Length: 442
Image (tube, rainbow, N blue to C red; front, side, top):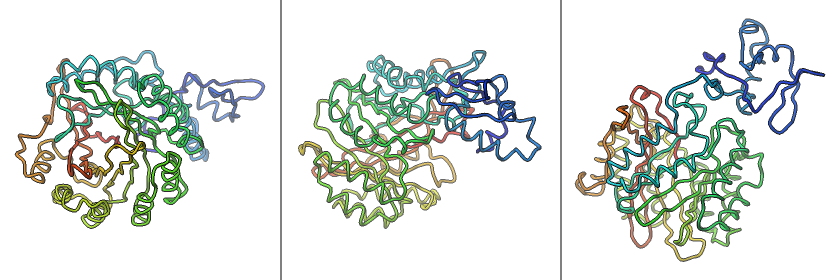
């Protein structure tokens, strides 16, 4: 349990979805109706719906009670008090991020897209953003992020990564909630979406962490329409080999060649594992993406990955970007490198890979938007002014100022185009909260 939780244990409350039953024996009743017995000390800790630790903080029961509290938090029985306290006021996360993306649309000369972006954030995010902005970030860390195409992409587009979860739901309930959101929101590819869900979500015991988005969308809004992409986390695995096997099983079930992924497993199976699947759903041929998460990225490992896909020449800007990042003092062993392998379920779309360079883990400090732009422009041999860009700070309509935090730099390589797109994934942080800006990759 994190120190911030230990220091604020009295700030936790029993979720309104859980009830205490006093007779015949004290028990805690979950939303599924299952009952768990409560000891007298546990009843006292949950008295009046608030978690209180003062009666036993100096006793031998401290460690067992902390372990019990940890389990209640994981089950979403205990939640931060500001999620359930009606007296809490202030800016909601939804209000904040709607203001953010209105400002982003304006800075990207995409004001015409703003009504669609606004409605999409509200429809897809669901209740995840109905929390106060001040809710502990580590409790539900994933909030809307921008996918900014610095090079390539659709002119005038705005692409965002979202989260369909409810902060009061269990991990599996949130999987089901996200699946329902896709069922409502998908206009194309519903049958393929359900097939992939049937393959990836068959065993609910894999999906137990409240900190993981097991199914979430990214939506690309453009003047011509929109593309919805789904991302599935493959869930908890016993070892690396099991994670590779899960991805291979999906390819086989979708009648896709698996030799390529087997080759990656044989080459990188001891230093990487598959963790995510992604697929786009629009009126274009779909692309299935298998994400291989590396323990760390150094020049040799990246060169091997590019050579395996025959991108030694086209991938030079990626290598140069990594070299520039290493100059900033990044520790490669603490930096998660990611390569996503593209597959075409109908055999008609381009394959290729996308290399994701993490900009947060293992760095001594935060990179600025200008520094990232300089890294990209130098590698491409293009003026920095030719890249699509945003400043380090934005002022919202309310007057609040925010910091833009680069967290992933991605290079898309395809057989016929070579390097076709460079994308920067960006988080947003109110300036006063800049010290705790970490968010996971989307």
